[in-house]
Length: 254
Image (cartoon, rainbow, N blue to C red; front, side, top):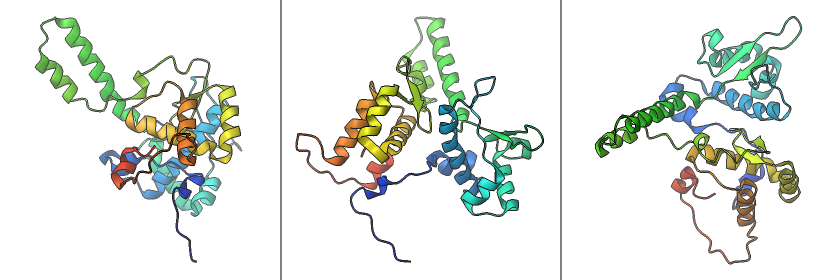
């Protein structure tokens, strides 16, 4: 087979499974096979659909249905291998615990709870908040060095979970990380403008917010801003910029 090259940003026309970078780089996930990481990305993508369809249990937890047959077809693996990959993720089968399967009875497929891979890091954020509260409640004589020590030992606190809590009021959540907030009329407008690019821009914003901790006052406006920049649609003449690999790594091209 002979494939053509990409020109400009043509690669963004397509739909992708989002593989969180941390699953590749962090020591906690080093023992997971590549197939298991890819499968987790597929399951993570399915959670967005389940949430929109209100597939929630009595504890308001999102669940999905993703059968062994689907895994075989998606990954091109045998039944035995598909089960092995699934077991890598499932704590009840000796796996890492990124998913939890629950049987529903004879003839019915298992439901799967996809666990939040970032939750193991958020425990550090919660400890950080407790430490800061303790320092403030102790005395006004808390030293700058004490505060510096607390901040210095908790570098991963830029989390959108702690910012702008009122943004989601009256809006539905979108994206892999469920952190893009849009009202129904905003979704309609965006789909009319973006057409088949809608999901791509949702995922770009969701991933960017999650990876950087940044937030935006208006997610619809942010998406449109990115889209018009990509299309060269601003009235102002924007000088073209060449982006390095570091820019793409940091998300500065967005």
